[in-house]
Image 1 (cartoon, rainbow, N blue to C red):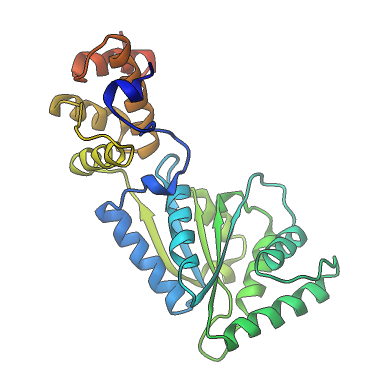
Image 2 (cartoon, one colour):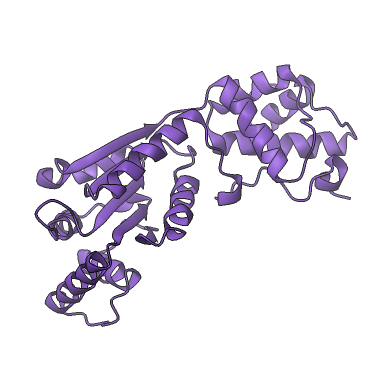
Length: 273
């Protein structure tokens, strides 16, 4: 038996993988999402979602991808930057391919022409085109910044034909400022802050419900400890809760009290023994 069966769950509720099903629409996440959607709906060009490590940027990006992809008035792609050594040429080719340009030429002028024609085609179809960029802080080269600025220049008299939403750590803004003209084009900027105690409780309850649970096994006092030592960061909340579930299962306890949380905090080196 594993702890999921012990607590009556259908699956693990606190995986740190960015599963969009577990997305919790906290008041601040809802507000951030509304701001970004306003930016893409009105074709404002460049929008930024800034947050520290473990704040749920990737989950939010996937949530937005699924939302926009289900709307016929949008053409949307998601590009995850996995290392900082990408070139402007690679970035341009990748964006073009993701948005449906079939010509795989390495010639920059041909790529730009193909992308412009494709964007014009989407515009004629009254589609808003959105490129979501996760781990945008990995975009570090000045050439890449200039490429993004150039792509934002593809526009009508009043609207951008291509809209970017960059999700990244605070250093992302430092990198963008390598091209001050690009940074000044930021139309929407929003910051994800740590969850407060009320939202932490709702977040944990939400994930347990999605996993098939019917009752919240954490005591009020244990939830307060989780909020304090997680710093309100979703990833750290998941790690503490996952370990707490396992610890309670090993001790054959259905209720997760502060004693179990303290053991977990010590194991994770978050609390001195």
